[in-house]
Image (cartoon, rainbow, N blue to C red; front, side, top):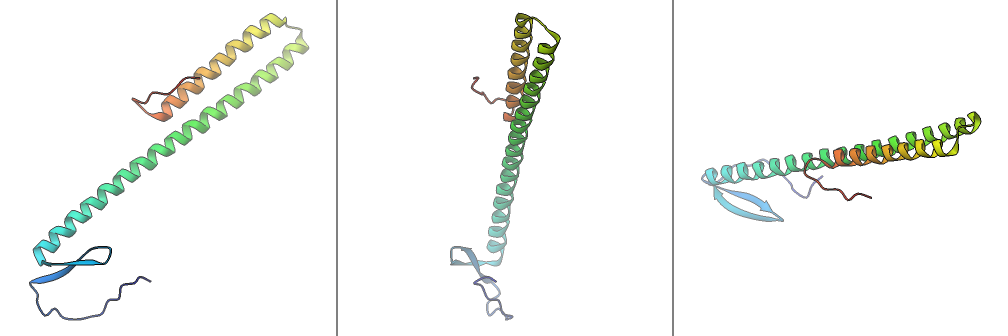
Length: 129
């Protein structure tokens, strides 16, 4: 329920109407002025709704990109751990393992950065860590 109450009635003066301009204020306007006022108000609200939808879409993309980058990094780290386990069993030399792991970690960092940049959108600069 709202604080407004509507009842059927007849207009005594059909040339002028009261227009609700917000926060409990009403202005007397002619019918054409009232129509124009509400057309402008509708356009203003639709523009705000459109901007809000764009903002929500961008926030969702940012969140998805962040989650994807995090998941990718976790998968790659687990892969490295499994690889390291097999390397110990297989007897690979430590220097070779270190080189492979460093290269893989660099790849993970590069992919995570690319995912963050993709999520942030074009023209957005991100600080590199």
